[in-house]
Length: 142
Image (cartoon, one colour):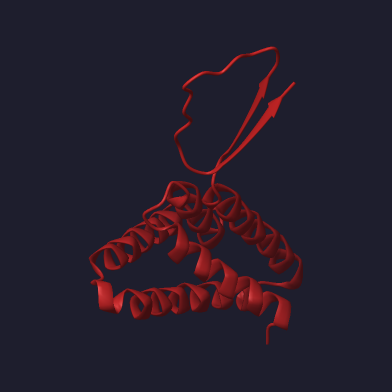
């Protein structure tokens, strides 16, 4: 039986997969999860990539009123796959896989956040200036 921390990690992994689908984070999460589940076996990793692609297709096809339900179902599927993997591993490998999974989740969280732009201006004059974009921008005027 898995300890609570590993169950939470598997749940976070399932959520990261669903949240990354269709975003800039998808390729990194997709390859990272396939690597974790594939455990160094090329054929197994390829199978996981195909499953992840099917998940993205299901999420992409979800209609407006059903999206939340579909997302929850897909997150549960991946949570279960990750729990099964963690459960079947010996303790030493379990800790290694947990660390790899945490790294993928962390990467997904970092990639999923808006990018930050930092601008420093010194001795500049601005007239009729406009800044357009999204995310967080920090301007320092000296």
